Length: 174
Image 1 (spheres, rainbow, N blue to C red):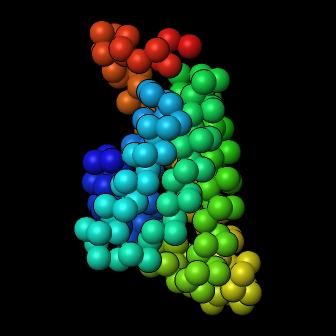
Image 2 (cartoon, rainbow, N blue to C red):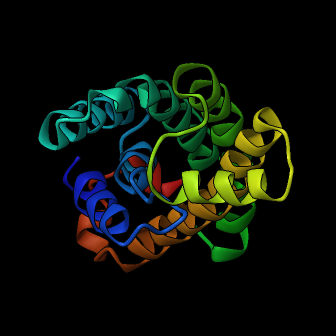
């Protein structure tokens, strides 16, 4: 949860067109499994809303659940053991997360959720792209980048764990 909150807040403050607020969720999914990852993702989403005072972020908790389930599934397949497999896993997660977030962004917020994704949506709108397409394009594009970076970061973290610590997590032995 702390990883999600800290990295997410840094990225938000820099107005980057990514979130990186699911690194902790993905890491927990790889280490312990989907239940703990769902809990970590939802709690971090709630804490982010409470700490920021912006409760409009709560509907995106659904995205955290999707991330946790997907990450646990690909972790079981060994996706985070090598960078060469973490990248396609991240791209797949980006597609899935973007497809989940876009309707929330469009229907709940009219495409204006703040931060870098809204800036991408605004640029697309400025180019004459219809709002639903602009929101979907911004969500998918930024999530592809965001989740790929997140999965590579998780792979790096897992690879750098000392053997004694890694041995405590049976999922890493697979």
